[in-house]
Amino acid sequence: MATLIVVGAQWGDEGKGKIVHLLGKKADYIVRYQGGNNAGHTVVFDGKTFVLHQIPSGILQPGKKCIIANGVVLDPAALKEEILFLESRGIRVRGRLAVSAWAHLILPYHKYLDAHREAGSDKIGTTKKGIGPAYSDKVGRTGIRLADFMEPDLFRELVERNLQEKAPVLEQVISLDALRRETFKDYDALRKFFEPFVANTPALLQEALAAKKNVLFEGAQGALLDVDFGTYPFVTSSNPVAGAACVGAGVGPGAIDEVLGVVKAYTTRVGDGPFPTELTGEMGEFLRSRGQEFGATTGRPRRCGWFDAVVMRHSVRVNGITRLALTKLDILEGVDPIRVCVAYRYKGKLLKDFPASRQAQAAVAPVYKDLPGFTGPVKGITQLNKLPVAARDYVRFLEKQSGAPVGFISMGRSRDETILIDKRFRWTP
Ligand code: IMO
Ligand code: MG
Image 1 (cartoon, rainbow, N blue to C red):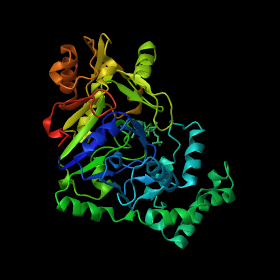
Image 2: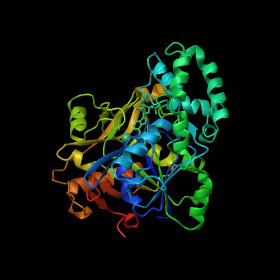
Image 3: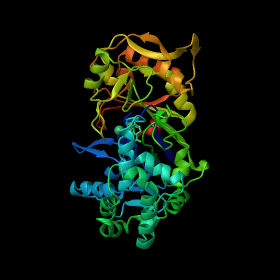
């Protein structure tokens, strides 16, 4: 590994946290480049479970440098809490985390706007963390960046301007005075707290790349939640796809060596929107309970379904995925047959490619190929040739259908529960 982007290949929650933690061992820098604290990356480390929302999962690897880059929208109050929480559990953060001065902020009014929208008929099932309104402001050129936050007079002026502009909507839920109080309550302390963290992160990365350091870019969400390529408008407001790592971190496209797509052996989605292979009956319930499919950020039950190769071909294409990390294969143990969606049927036609039309996305009927199930126990196996033949065949089928080879297989949250296939990903020195 030199520079590697790790992306979610489905609708998020594919297991990126574990994969980044695993590969982070060989990285010098771990960088978050988009999204915000809508992400929930779960890592089991030293027998303890950590859920990271804004800080790269690499922070749990002693000595590694972590960067929250410009493409992220960051909630200063929530970030401070996350830093203090990690430190209370013995993880050193100060001196290891740099936060981009260019990053846009999520402020209290963004959360109210998000919640207000979610209470209406345009609801899409967001995490209500203020992500959409914060990115809207960024693109609408009324956003406030960390650099602005560090300048008290400017910050106050920009907040006031935004409150006035958004007053017609905000005042339906909260008075501007209450909102001002909430916004400025801890402002001075927060600003001082962040002083040592604020950095010119593109310059840091340029230096790292020039010194041939290993840099790992940690994506949040997944390709099907991408604002361009996902199931629009049921998406997040950033670009989780790999290409966004360059813009979101301030590095050139030539700097990237490899793109690893993290993919579950089945599919999950949390929030509303199209999900062609969704299982609403007993099988969906089974996957949810065995796979512990509940949101790490909001606790909502995840919707579950079969593996969707149409989605994966789309994802491999729009991300430029060169290798896959297949997670949660063990959850399918004993399921027979295992179904894989290989195409869609729509208006009498067979679709091999994921459609752009929201009507088509909502109405397609999956065409399934049934594969024989496997019996275990597979959990604990660390060599590919020890897996039952049917499990290996399933993996090969997914590779062929998706169009990218599997570099490793994960069958549990801990680092040892992994089968390494592509030796270049070896994380032990
Ligand atoms: P990680 O990084 C799964 C979903 C929300 C909602 C949509 C928009 O853990 O994979 P937002 O709050 O972003 O405006 O909500 O996106 N969503 C996620 N789903 N995993 C995530 O992150 C998600 N982050 C946002 O549920 O459907
Ligand atoms: Mg998650």
